[in-house]
Length: 125
Image (tube, rainbow, N blue to C red; front, side, top):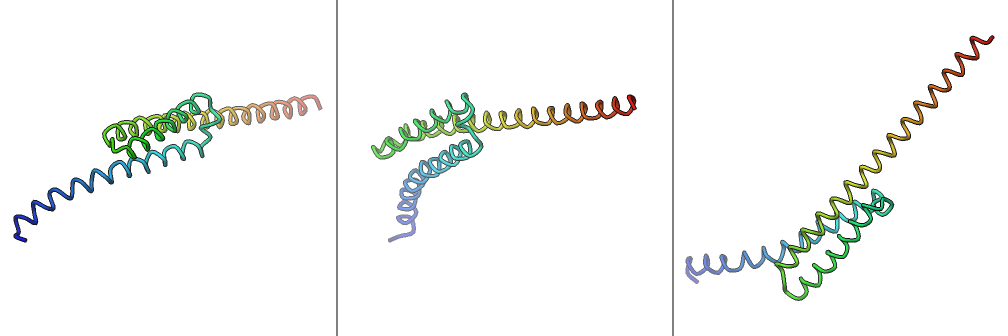
């Protein structure tokens, strides 16, 4: 095989391999985003839960499209699924921050009421 034939053969094979790995990589990335959102409590927040459901459905549809050989549609569905999973993750994180904030405020209020009770008790003595 001449050098030019080898280059042509590689030029035809490499894109074919890349097109197979891209949806697989997207598939793994999307599954990872869904798992992250689940682990952070995405199913406990109603808005996050909805977007997790969208992501799961789109992921399943993408798998079917890949099995059918429709890689373009599979990639599109994986992009949508990943976006929904990212949104669910952000919503879950936001809820966690809100919970932490509410706890911190409650702790501060408890400290304040404890101090005012101590000050009042000292004045009353």
